[in-house]
Image (cartoon, rainbow, N blue to C red; front, side, top):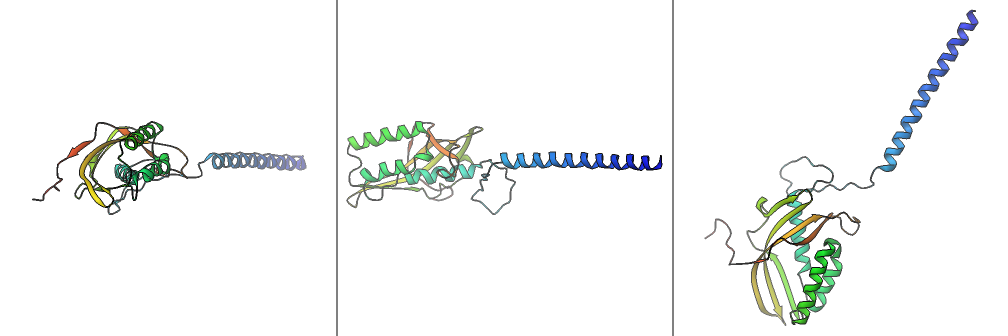
Length: 211
């Protein structure tokens, strides 16, 4: 009888160990599945302003990042270093991943119109942020969870054969949307999606507080 009790005790211990092993196997399977389904890359948008701390969530896009993206792509799109007839279509091709298909079609139509009107040949163009028109909260308005309106105030200068033919200041109200495509071609995860209203010609811009 004593030996029988010892055998029963051993079997009970064996079943306990089997249960523990089974639980560990299930836990390992769950961990493997979580690792297998987890994204390889997590996009975190860090604001350009680093003097103050903040709490960031993966996938959250702060307004300063939206503004920085918009100005950077817009400036690259409209900068014609040598000849607009060559640089403008090259810029469209190079930056197409940063525009929605709808806005890309708008820009292609603009390219065709300018080419027909003779606004590209031998023309160089420079776009820069107006001094004093840097980012501030009022320049980025959230229209929805993944949509923003961005106001860019820029100076545009155009030259033909080195001679200045245009020097104006314009406000562009642009719509920007979250654009989840291959991060290799668009690491921002954002895209230009059109104008929220017609661009506005500005008078000579005076920085707030100046005379």
